[in-house]
Image (cartoon, rainbow, N blue to C red; front, side):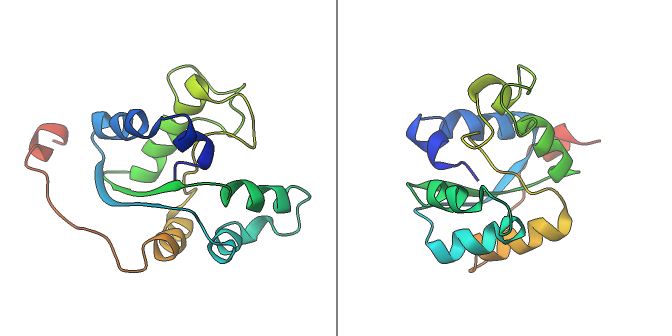
Length: 142
């Protein structure tokens, strides 16, 4: 998900391009301003943390772009493209390393595992995903 800071800074196209250039396939895309209900469900794991209310306020402050990507080891590949949570510690060449300076306003969220991804995809894409096959995949994978 591209967070409100990434949308406001006009980074949506750049971020999508990075995932596509790597070889991942976009199977879901949705822009919306999250409701408190969706935001609270998405970040429920952080409910007891001191930053939770600020996180909910931030993520509902403007439009986000929810995305679903697929490909071989898509979660780990995406997390490498995204970089560590703290933008100041992220390596150049990653999304956060190139565009983020903060932990809270760090441009993008990526699922950290299969179970989390399944939950988050169900939350952000209740009508399912758009499955399709890219003709060029034979040139991406052996």
